Length: 404
Image 1 (cartoon, one colour):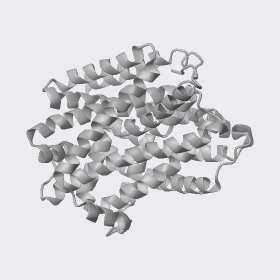
Image 2 (spheres, rainbow, N blue to C red):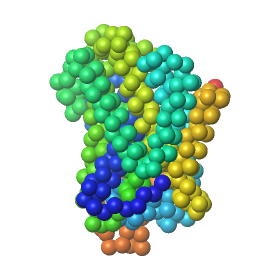
Image 3 (cartoon, helix red, strand yellow):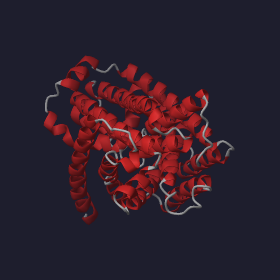
């Protein structure tokens, strides 16, 4: 769904905001909400340390990925193929498989959001949600429409979450203290790896970078702008996670137990009473819909290297992607073990793709005269190593789960 490059000042600003919001807001899906509240109940104020460390790692990852994609003027899979022939195709397959798996969950989450707001059947609500997303991609300027919807829904989510947070009156000073001096930091390794994988793993790693390539915002001359919006995007995601964390912490420290079947919803319920569940439905609907858009758009950009006809008809490829995900959910429900397996395979994407891009950053035939900062390379390789450890641990759990 490449757009005609608009190099005017307003066009450039619009494309930069679009890339930033695509990455930041589409990362905040149903799993993001659930994951944050579950970890808060488990680790209490110490979880602030995991959030802080994960945000710093996320910034390092996105700075590496966005800058290298921008200066090379290539999408992630094309860079990987130039570094290690065939690696890009493998990454593309993992991204698309993971994208379908995540989109099944996102479509289900959108249906549950409509169910919480209006009481309609979740499966019917999922079909309505899919139709809304498809309508966005059918308009004449689909990319601009996508950017606008994501930014609007992101604002709605943030307002609702901040409102719930203020009502729960969380122990902010205690959380701030433990963000830097946690009680047991060694216990937070797995949460940190999980947060990083959920925020900049899978398709999200490349969402903003590929949006910039489609908009023509590439080259060394744009490095400063790319750096700024990459950091800003991660900070937006971090602010949303902190607000959810504080809202949940306020509920838990007040002595309430979160509902294991829907912990994020119970935070809104305790904060706002019965109306809280309807407001949570709105948050869940917005989170799910933006994630559907982000996963469908970004996964499709990875298909461009499969066949030359995919890119000219990219909007139809996006629509087909959404229809397939919706058909799987509405037809056979959520095949849990398949989804878990696909999600675990998707965990391979970040260390593999990041390693390819870090190697590419040192090759002049890919990045030209651009010199990638050494500190970014060092942090990038450390992050890749940490994610490999996380993947190994995740696959051990996966094998046990699939055998159960």
